[in-house]
Length: 283
Image 1 (cartoon, rainbow, N blue to C red):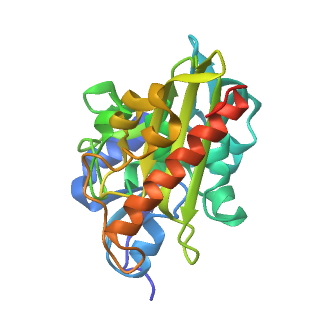
Image 2: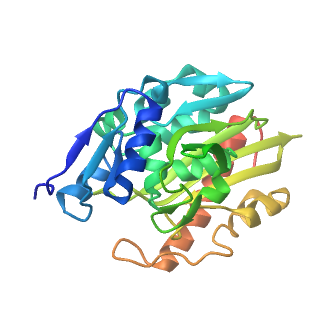
């Protein structure tokens, strides 16, 4: 199919883009990489009257340090993030997360902002951003505000972005973790995660003393595995058994809820063990 008829604008500034969103209201949709919006438009599941293309706003593609935090522009592509020395030096797990997204064509065009706002429960970025304590920088008619990743993913394909707002950047604070990893079981046709686990760990005396774990693909909303984090001092395998605590695993044509719960435990253990090994520790 082809999309329904729509108007198109490619503003050169953020203020101009916000003005277009105010002018067109619910009729306007934002385009960056297009890998979320365009397929929906082709199927006519989305029929915007105005498409606002942000790719001419250079500041939205920048990857830079800002007062000790890593700031990744919302229009930065997955490929740019995967191969960024700044990202690798600040939180290498995020490079690994970017490299697991789709295929080369998708990574070259798709953007972190488009993926995050689309809030697909099987997308890779939410797990990594949750584990890294990231914050989303949003700009709208009322100015700029930040929302923690833990508060941003609020439901199935639903984020905390407000009406008329644009996600401009993702901010990742300084990391104390000594090792990290992102591992997933992908649905082979799409590349989306049946289960994806991001882990950042601290190691002392060869043992993991603390961890931050984000999980995607298992429930209808990505989540921090708080029960796993609380149990890591008792051993990684035992802690990983709590990976699906407090959530209702999805049950669909791709995997049953029981299988997703099993995958959550298996991949949480593997991610923790990989992160620990990279930090010089053990299970």
